[in-house]
Amino acid sequence: MSNLAKHIVWQEKRVTRQDRYRLNNHRSCLIWFTGLSGAGKTTLATALEKELYEYGIRSYVLDGDNLRHGLNSNLGFSPEDRKENIRRIGEVSKLFVDAGLFALTAMISPYREDRQLVRERFAKHEFIEVYVKCPLEVCEKRDPKGLYKKARKGEIQHFTGISAPYEEPLHPEIIVESDKQTLEQSVQQVIQYLRENHYLDDWQQS
Ligand code: ADX
Image 1 (tube, rainbow, N blue to C red):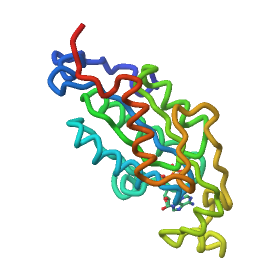
Image 2 (cartoon, rainbow, N blue to C red; image 1 turned 90 degrees about the horizontal axis):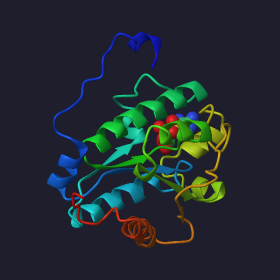
Image 3 (cartoon, rainbow, N blue to C red; image 1 turned 120 degrees about the horizontal axis):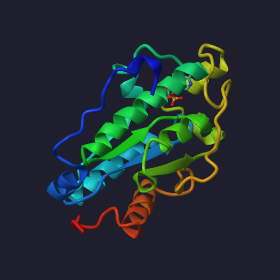
């Protein structure tokens, strides 16, 4: 606990996590997509969200670019600001998971340590790291927002992959290779993981 919060008392709730699982008929988790800009994190997360909807699962995509318009509008791309960006989204995700939802996050989240700190905020089965792997050359060629071009010209500082690092996950739960597989294959790969690990089972109170 930070020193600023030392006189704040945690309030217990009357609707428990189990109650929420029963109401939704499924458990909850955080699926954390990480990878370079242009690797396809948001595309995959939103396609997965649609698929989960068809399965009757309540989920919500938290997208890095979008959150930087509001919650994180005071943050830039220095290592410290990225750390705070990831921390905040980790905490928001924790609320979503506590509320009984599948939170799907799409942030570059380039630093291993920052991702690890988020992981540590969750129980083991609640956090699923998905590395959306794609070579820099391919992301740069795609350049959907024209940002790589600007970064190469020096118009954007600290651009991930060009002038700032991306630290690959060492032990992600899932790796999808967006330059080698179709979007549908990647969605089904995640679905299969969820199915095999009982995330999609009907919730039954034991
Ligand atoms: S993170 O590093 O803090 O996780 P986040 O995912 O929120 O990044 O935001 C990345 C998005 O911001 C990129 O997809 C890109 O559209 C945009 N962006 C703007 N400047 C940069 C930069 N210097 N490095 C990376 N992405 C940037």
